[in-house]
Image 1 (tube, rainbow, N blue to C red):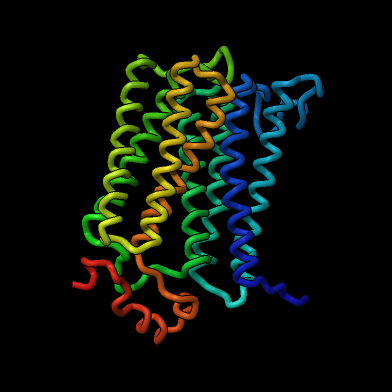
Image 2 (cartoon, rainbow, N blue to C red):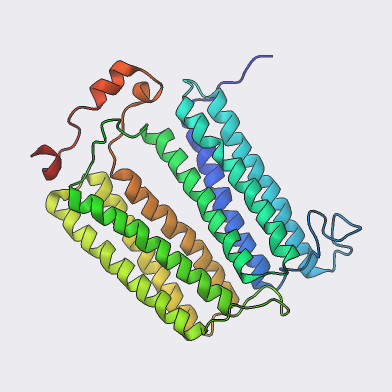
Amino acid sequence: MRVPRVSPLAYRRIVLAALASLVFIMVTGAAVRLTGSGLGCSTWPTCEPDSFTPRSASDTHGMVEWVNRLITGAVMLFTVAAVLGARWRSPYRRDLFRVSLGLPLWVFANALVGALVVWLHLSPVSVIGHFLLSLGAVANAVVLYERATHGVPDPGGARTATPPIVAAGRALVAAACVVIVTGTLVTGSGPHAGDERADRLDLAVGDVVRVHGVAMVVFLALTALAVRRAHQGDAAPAVVGRLHELLGVLVAQAAVGYWQYFTGVPAWLVGFHVLGAALVWIAVLRVWLALTARVPEAAAAGAPAAVRAASGPTSSVRATTG
């Protein structure tokens, strides 16, 4: 049988589709909780002990949970397509194949945690773990797309920004993690548990919201400072552009967060906030990945001479040239 060939452009589109599906399942997973359908199916992998599907199409909660499980299966197919596409890509790149293998593993692991969520009756800790694993899968897809588009990181460790901007990039990733984790604590202690019988974290939701809000303000301030410093010539244009993207997404996410707070946390706004969390995570990862110089396709495919040629002076920013 003739092995199909996948062009670099087609492969980038496959990876982008996989990334979009991973973000989509986060939103639909949130919809399960926000509609009170977290225990719509009483067991896993079947919906009921004696039925793979809900017993009745009129069982709204059961149908919502079951459809989300079907979407998870579709997401798995997208991730498998990313693996097969990397294997059949022409020219073949071993680094893309290795990184792509993580995608279906993340989805499978998260499906198992999803089973724990059901078996533990929506324990807040299990729900938080479910969400964080989803972000892990998204990070894997972002790295894969970056490599498929721009090549492998420079083997000499060349940077596209000055040391202060690189340090700011690390701080931004750390700040994003703090904001995301404190956000999950808000979710675990606040409304929209997924079912009225679900437990909540033994935390004062008002206090957790304030901690989350302060973390978000710090994140915004760090981003604004990084943008200002980058405009002084301390970063390549690609880094500046991605910092602007991060700032825009952060401002929008903060606006949604405050809108939720002052309107009583309506479920539909929480869904947008979950989408925003995924977009913030993608944006900060894109900034971090842009801070490392990349080698061209030939080098990424394994040509040593090309790697050596590409690992010379690559940056025009101040700190790397003098």
